[in-house]
Length: 309
Image (cartoon, rainbow, N blue to C red; front, side):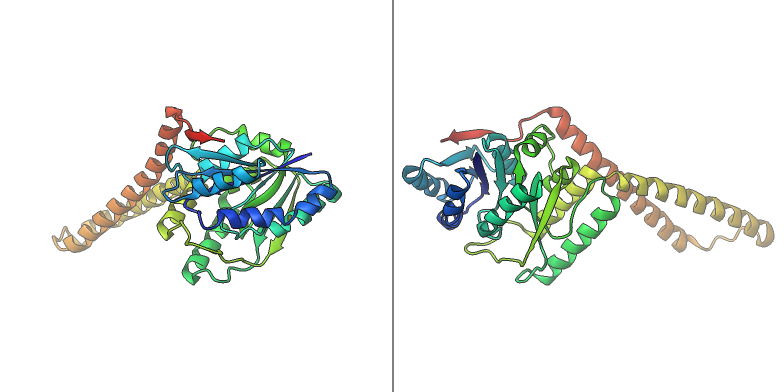
């Protein structure tokens, strides 16, 4: 059988050789189970020497392949391109920074062979070495997603997983432009085994994810797999309509009893500003969903390949 390792990369010149070496440490296991290997690096428009480092590996090992984008399309595009171009009967998706330990691959294969699973996925049981504020918001995101999402998303889940050909084909068949892979993995179903491991810090270089980037990515997940924000908008509308009706009744009663005093304009101004803010917030949520529809109907390609080796 053929095993494909898909590795999306963005400015990872320092880690390309290391992740290759770590995967190759499992070569004896692969040989003993009659598994052929291909390693597909997906370069997401890197500005450093990532492509050059991959080409060095290709010169020494023909099992290494390269897919290079014309510009930076984002990690989700890299994941989709890698899965779409992988030829393996089983496909593993992993990061290039070695936070996804290739040493787990034999155990993942054993679970698939002996447990009858379609997918073996990984989740972190700790966030050692990660900023506390980032860990807090990450946990809150998973908690919210478990409550509102129409898909199974496990707390601490990584993109690192080994999948059968059938599962990969089902993921690739979903051509949506705005992608959130963690949600897609759960949405397609299939029998999944979860492996837990302690957090592994990046070996070299710095993370490419900023707090703002992660925040926007979390919004993609919420809006891609839940309509709860739209329901919240509807509930807010009903609540404030009821509140306004009660206020009108109270004002009428007050006017009939005490007359029509002119004081109260500061409180009225505050109410108007508050209501205006609520309305803008609701319009913003609707705009976010509309923007997703706008990007989908354009039908632009998810990625553009500049070079393929």
